Image (cartoon, rainbow, N blue to C red; front, top):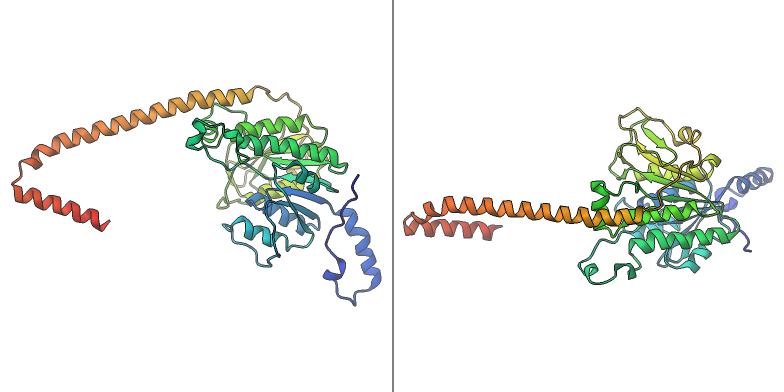
Length: 365
């Protein structure tokens, strides 16, 4: 067994030396009891960084998984579009944040990450897009493939959580993956290496794990999404809600709130912005108070369904694209057939002048 690492927030760094010893003792008694140590994967992404910042604001400790060493912490908050190294440099400079070198594909580093942790927020996700070489090579050999990140990575993370002896909750961000025949599922699976399909398979691993889980299925996360007051919507049991844009920070808040919500254990939550502004709740806490653990059987055959949908739907989309291209070519041919005879009837000087004009326009562009 491993001993729990102490939170790196030090009282003397937050309090002047003249503070009465009695107050220092009071802070020392209450802070450790209320704080959590939470591991975060995908910490440099939009949701991950917001989750780390929220944990720090709540007085919790965060252990973040980073693929590269970070030399020193930056005190300057990174821009919304900053690269991962700039975000990592900022996060490790926050009080109570500890970096662990590793990768979601490295089980040993995941075991190190979860040493002494009370919970883990799994905010990582596959970003690999389909490549031309995938047609003659097995793309799952690429560590960045969705199968390795969203499924095999979750398998290793759950094993590390179960073996830690301290991790009691795994909060995972996935997406709506029970509609393989929808247009967006076919498109995202086709372009993203079956990312939605493997996310759902990762969910199945969580439901079979001994460690309590909370699965969060968000809407379309966008930093530009607005969140009017009283516009949060939540459905448990993997319920269906209208897909709407929602800020990543709102999903990060939900993930952190779930950590201290016992009835959110072993629950699949769909999280959206309400379809009508102001028609929802003002806080996740109000909504979480009414959620219950999963109480239905989730399908076990969706991987094959997703694969079939991509094959059939992808073929249909390709044929539709070919038909549109053919129609466009015929329209161009018809237009040229109508215009060319008239142009050829022009005197030679006029034709040369027109050609020179077209050439000049092309050079200007």
